[in-house]
Amino acid sequence: MSDVFPDPDGILPVDKPAGMPSHVIVTTLRRKFGFAKVGHGGTLDPDATGLLLILLGKGTKISDRVMGGDKTYRGTIRFGVATATQDRLGDVLEERPTAGLDQAAVENAIARDFLGDLFQKPPMYSAVKIAGQPLYRLAVRGEECEREERFIHVYAFRLTAFRPADEKAEADFEVRCSKGTYVRTLAHDLGQALGCGAHLCALRRVAAGPVAIDRATPFADLLEMSRPEVVARVIPCAAYLSGAL
Image 1 (tube, rainbow, N blue to C red):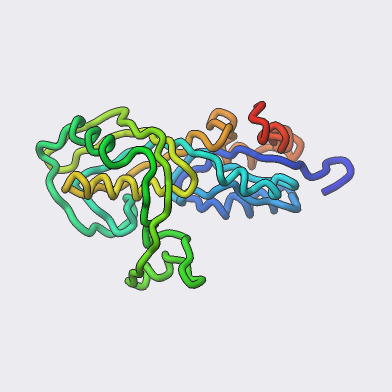
Image 2 (spheres, one colour):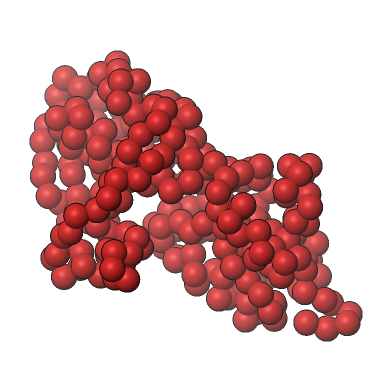
């Protein structure tokens, strides 16, 4: 921080690349631009892309409000394969053919079981803590424990494309949901409901609260900017809270 370039207060929308943990983005921005207080408004899995809200200065004080916002995602589900992590990176647990699976069957299952108020069990490969221990640490040791189901709400869940196949059908989708929803668990549970298994093979967050992905700057581009250029892209706390973006 300096008198010439004081630390900003607000939310910096970042377009996160695949393969990078959210905490690495937080740490890199803090070190490169000398921001004293940096946080986030809800992480993304390392393999996911899209909108990551970085909290700066007094923006860290409204983290609960930012994290509590609804989220919108777009992604791809692959049917016929269930994995340990419920995404494409996990070990394969089961494979089944998807011959005969069509778009209508998937949409009927979504309408029946995956809209509105739901209870969802967090996956073992997650940062949820039980007795102070993150679940993923137990999972990598091959252990599994009981997890309490969490209340979530799915406002909309629609297919945008469906590609049938005898072996491994795929569907593109868009989902709008409440905080705390594991989209890869939605994909996994949908596969179980259809009797063929499924996993999430691509995910992109396109909105979080009042902020849409078109307000975000690709992370690589931010690293090429000067500190004042980055600060100019910060949404003030008052603007975020009022939704007047």
